[in-house]
Length: 291
Image (cartoon, rainbow, N blue to C red; front, side, top):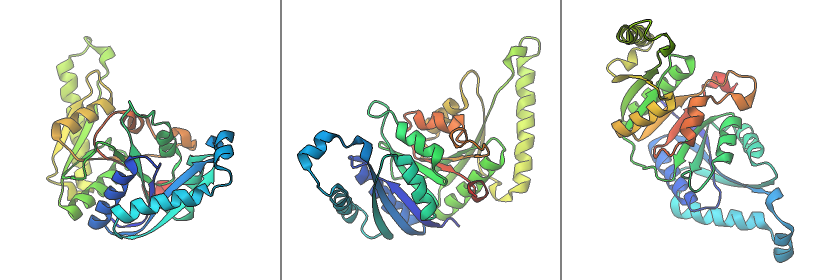
């Protein structure tokens, strides 16, 4: 069963905050969440001298905390125990990572605007540095989640994502689809038959999937889709599958086996985050990876 001891919700004082707070309430009503931290950091480096000249020694932290409290009171309705944390630090991603460690946060909720409204630079930095699983909620996403898509590459990380997905669909009575995107070494065509190469590749992958079913009998009967990349990236194929299947949630496993944090996220999650996908993306680390 999925139970979240502590969850962090990152707010930026924009119109997406209300949506994030409402979605957090929806999660707390459907999953056991013990504590929620609504957080915002005032980047002191962005406070110009003009601001200080106009507003003087105003207690900006208290004003922002009061504003967030109004939003939470109106939209969260005491769905779980919560606390509002407002900090004043020059580096937002560093203080957020510190909060994750300090409060043993298991899941962080990030809002995401479409690319014509934001570069998403801060979100990408947070994804790379936060030592916990992250749920990205696009501004155009729906709260109504009935179908879950979990891409796998047969790594330990994707198996962890699969286990989480299976628990999630069991708790919330959702539908789950598994997919795998495979690539062919096209540089060897026409030296070898493309048709034979496809048949062989699919035979190998189906064998891996049978082995996966043996290790995880709970996924027996779960629909499985095998997709050839065929000139597109893995992220592109996942995005297309999301649209075709009308899925409401994407679950991705994060490896995190690189000792350099900025390189541990992986290209597929990064590309998917930077796409205008109207579906929440749950990027999950296993406890072993986080430790």
